[in-house]
Image 1 (cartoon, rainbow, N blue to C red):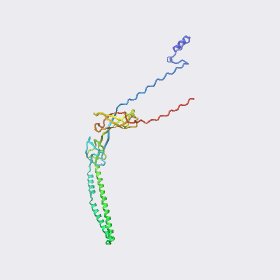
Image 2: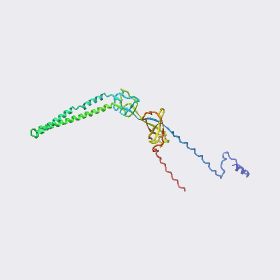
Image 3: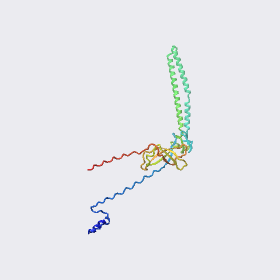
Image 4: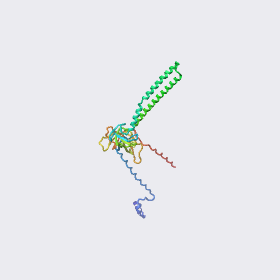
Length: 317
């Protein structure tokens, strides 16, 4: 604008004052290209994924042991912290009635004297029938006596069979009574350690748990993993795990389960690790830190979302 004003002054033309705000306005007939838009701000870098992740060590198995039949608790044979084996008796219910039923059933199941007596009577009837048959062949016996001997033998045989069946029923009743007596014993379903004693002698069970047993020979660790590592954690992958708050060295663990989805609210998914603990050096119920070994099996990838096909451009006219 200063050059234009100077040229107008030399030519003797009046120079009109320009508003301050329009000092950069282009003269008529001249086109000034638009200023390029500033480049967009770079996207913030993704949050760094921690090398180690927090986890919680839990027992691989836990069982609240209760009785299969109602009754009054007579004794608890284990204390908190005791090691138990699968099938070991941990408590008993009062069983005087069941024990008496077993004794009575045993007596009935062992009563074979009636069977022996009926067997002897059948043998005698069979011998008599043979003799009457022989006499009838020699025309020394009548037909009526032969028929009576045959009927006596049939009756003696059926009585013996009936007695044997009754004896078999008594033996089955004895087995049933013994099983009912065994139900008064509460056994541990797993190998482990008694974590808690929930009832005391004299209390009614009625379906309530008596003790709680946890398995600590093998533990599991639940890990919450950020979504940024989805597809990097794989089943079969090895990891190094260290418990917090205890003086224990890091142990090797193995991934046994990985979620195939990401929780939208928290942006995380879960992975489960199996931790061997045969020596019992790791306690259950403590927090831990785990570092995954990236060398593992095939990755679990999220499902691919199909992209929309591009709209073809309209031909220019």
